[in-house]
Length: 112
Image (tube, rainbow, N blue to C red; front, top):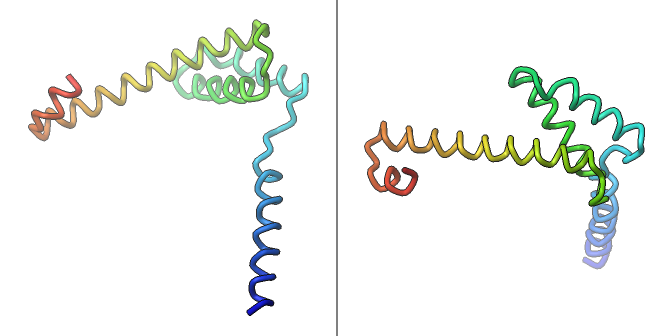
């Protein structure tokens, strides 16, 4: 029994140290930030698929920077907030349409 407990403790310790190593994102170097910003600039005015690429690049850039005076981060944050607001409104509209089709009046009043 002691051997099993030691084995479980060892496995828990290994897992505790392995999770942060796996969760690390790409290096937050200036080259990567520049590449993400260039990807954003090339795609943010395009179709929805291109805007999805721009949104993902902006999220990666914002996850790396913590400087509040970074003008690029402020610009990207405005774009990300705009897309998040748009997606939230779209989800709300879809929920309302589903409630209307199902004649669920309580949800219509809550969402409407």
